[in-house]
Amino acid sequence: MAEPAGTPSPIQVAVVASIAPGEVREWSLRLPAGACVSDALKACGLDPDHAQCSSSVWGRAAPPGQALRDQDRVEWCRALLVDPKVARRQRFARQGARTAGLFADRRPGAKAGY
Image 1: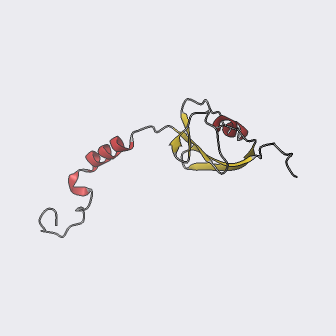
Image 2: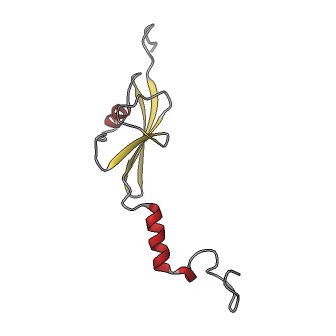
Image 3: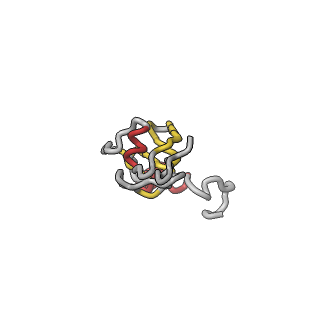
């Protein structure tokens, strides 16, 4: 169906959401021109104002009112429970220096680091 002259054409947007750990859902939407991030999330049944989640466009943080362009990818992610750097330090401390990393499988009697 042809659009009337002067009417902006709708935009195609992908929305990807991490609903639960290990679960990712994806939607492909056609939205009216001028739609924003919150419009895309609402069209998928997601709450753009959810306190534990954040939205981004192509991996860059985006407020709910940010306007979308054709072929944009909106991502809706849960907040991290632990900072990845802190988690890595805790894992390393739990494992100990001798059982982790590059030199964990060395020959019997070899010097440290070889």
